[in-house]
Length: 139
Image 1: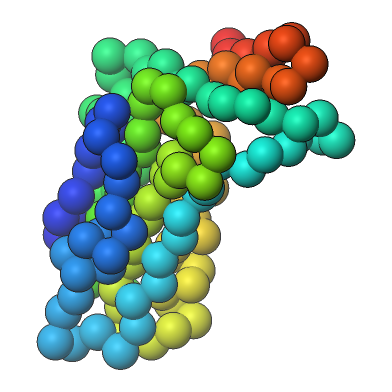
Image 2: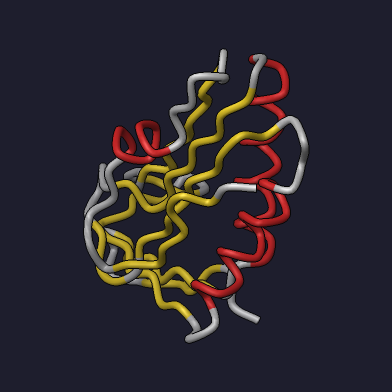
């Protein structure tokens, strides 16, 4: 099991760095994902976002990464989530997984992203162009 990056940070995320981190001479596949801030949500125009994380967020992120990395087909995992203010087009979540074959890499990366989205204690505040706002994923 190799987890090369597992960070919750207020710094911009670098997808290429995550892909490079999971490179492995045995890997025939590296699959990556970038969750990018879009300018709309459910038909409403989004002006900006802000993510807040619980102090346990990085620990939870690393736990999720470890679970994915424990799969014998997975060679390495790298995943990070951004907190703080983000602009349209910024990456909020990046992930990369390496395996011997593409099907396993796609499946592992999808599991990684789905579990991070389901379990990470990070909440999103969306500000809309009409001046309203909403919190998403709040308990």
